[in-house]
Length: 317
Length: 160
Image (cartoon, rainbow over all chains, first blue to last red; front, side, top):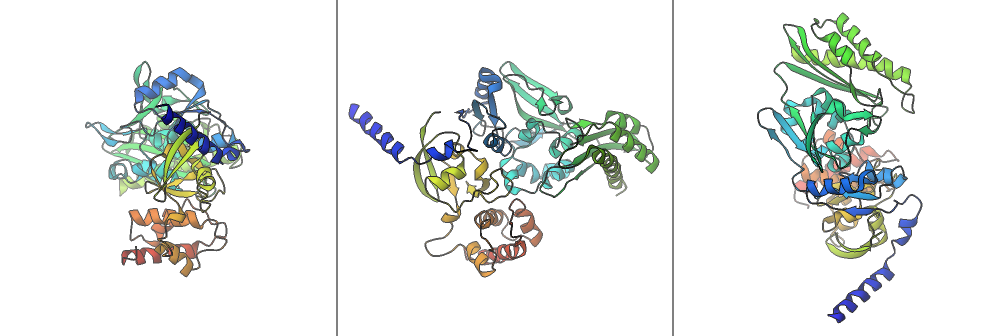
């Protein structure tokens, strides 16, 4: 027995001596050390999250997290990789009420899902216009939501579709509409020990028409502004409306005043123009390297107008 | 940080290395097995130069923790040829002059392989979209798309 241990020990020592990765780890730009976990169940993951609180970070696809960790923007002490948690990759019907997809459902799987393409076309469009195929193979929609960036096209589409999050915590499960999930820039309503396990999308009501539009510097860049709308029109009167705007405020949000102004209206260009102006008034954009606040406000108006027109065209067609 | 012995299957060969969790797959590949075909360029997942296939799926190795792909099959550009017999994609890149400085080439070829594995007969537009996450700073895209289209045809004819 002792011999076995000695052999193992000398094996480790040899390997350690041959180990040449020490330097890159220490090099500038390398990631700070952390403790790494691979839970197999949601319960294990939430237990780790509640034990380590704010010092823990979930790793799903990693396309946002790992580069930020390498830059040193975030330095989690504990990294909880949920890639090996079983049963989080699903995209499936949820009774007759809608569909649901899991926290590890990849953007690529959602993009190529016939159900998404046929019944939730704006979600398909918001994903399809992402140019990096690798990012879509690695990245998850839930990960994208949990980053909390206001420039998430996926979040804008899901907000217009009335998505609801399934959240698990050490103390149990809860559900939360996506629009209540975002509190502030990069801040979500997740409490200590909680993680998003999936997303529920209700079946669009008959007569629902949707449109997604965004404005980008180059196709591979994130949006300067993005707009997703869902409207229900009966007898040419707008009965229900959801207008989601991204990259124009600290969070992706619904332009509630514009929605209220739209309901009960006959959708002629005058009404649409007015609603678009109201929506632009609800934005609180910033100046950054992509655009000025002024430009964002102006283009928010134009994009809301075009999105509503596009949704209407679908109705006519 | 905890060091551990991890087993990696890279280009069909088992490599046992001692790693810490904060090592990326690209750092591991370039350092330990000396597979420098995988390129570090932007290192933030924007350019596609570090693309490798993990269980056949295109993966940005700069944005992947090595430890998370333990026991999975990693394919780098070095694993494509069989001896001196080049992969049809490699041959097509040479035949069509789809290489200028060559830095993006390994990532381009592996992404193209993933694309052709899923869609053996892509349209030109599908090739463009399939390579949407790979940047060529020499902007030699036309010849790259030509090469991938030609390789697709060669592979369909059984040149795999």
